[in-house]
Length: 233
Image (cartoon, rainbow, N blue to C red; front, top):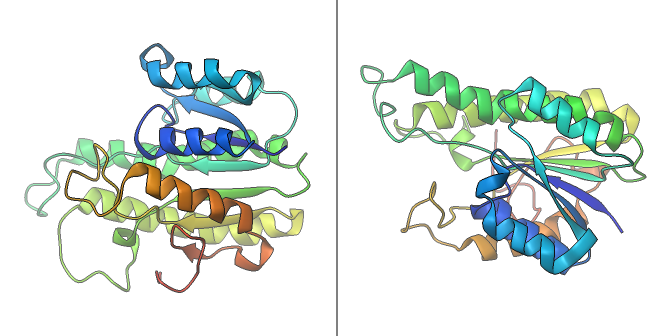
């Protein structure tokens, strides 16, 4: 049985993915910033026993991430860096950018992923088939950028893509596969009501992608089905 660490697992894509993975007999470590608010996640854990463990994990905190890594023993086969934010305002034009929001977005969307990977690297090294999925977005594609808006979010996802690509070269000698993957435009608090797919539809595709990702896709930018080529850097 493979084990998966998911960040930001208390709602949206993260929760739907945790639910789909335990139903497929993965063991899930479900990280969330405030475990006291993760009511649905705790109910899911109670229903699945040892298959799901709720883990306090604030990706913006060095101490929280290190403590979470210290809590877990054994191996982690898969890391899904799902936790992310999109500023609600001050992100439309250069003249209106709220730099505090910009910094917060980078703190979570980019540095948060780096923190988690660094702290859980020893756990990945115990796996026979380690892989990392960084949830990115088509908005992070420089080649396909044809408008302005969502500055902080788009720039943070472009930075995450570069982090992914760079780590692919560093970690490949250890047999660790890392990809950037877009979950699609999903109906969540972040994606909004007009998005094209539900969190459950996204999670279902991501589960299949997780099972199919291997060294041949290392350092690639994938769609939610695990296919390369749709998104370009």
